[in-house]
Image (cartoon, rainbow, N blue to C red; front, side, top):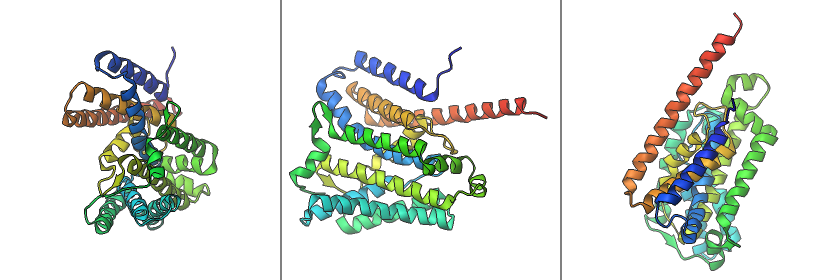
Length: 318
């Protein structure tokens, strides 16, 4: 009997969901709607790639959207003070990496729980952003910058090209580099990884820097599309990044996660959200449905892991 992988199952679910929405949601296959989906998907997708790598190490980054907001606000502030676009982008990325370095220092070096550190830094970054912006939005960017989030290369939006390139890079890093393989080992058993000669601290520090980098790229795309930056930039994506990573097959307990599954999961959320909106389903109901999906996937993953564990106990020699 043919046994499909998690990623193959998600691919089939995506195709089935796409066909279902095409059949029941008015205007779903309209070129404008499809283009709009492709412009929206990279924001969540890039953030989810960062969250996925963190979760593989059995961690979590609750500050990822405020890291993005911090990067976006500083990049926007720089452009509003007439810094060149390239310099402003580098300032935004640098600010995000400082956020990642702060998280990584307390988690990897000091040893504080990731959920506590990133919860605290989330509040910290929010406060710093409010201090900079006074609660207002920063807007009015050069046209060359606005093109990043709004232009297309032929029929393909530039943001989706950036997302797919970053997905490929993430897959390459995880599967073809020593650091990537170390990320999985740390997620499976950090103590064993340490005794095998791996520097767990360096691996974890790299993970939170990677997450921050992804947040900065997502921020650049978002402020370019919206032509403004403010404290709640991308804040609605926080729980969705966790949901999409978990739906994509990433084990919340660490040790497993595939880029392809994550890409499929992000696409599933985008298609589902867009289709339900076209059907006139209230946003609050869509959010409830997303929460139900997350709980269901976590429950299924829990029982699946438990069954696999029981099977391994039965076949193990006495």
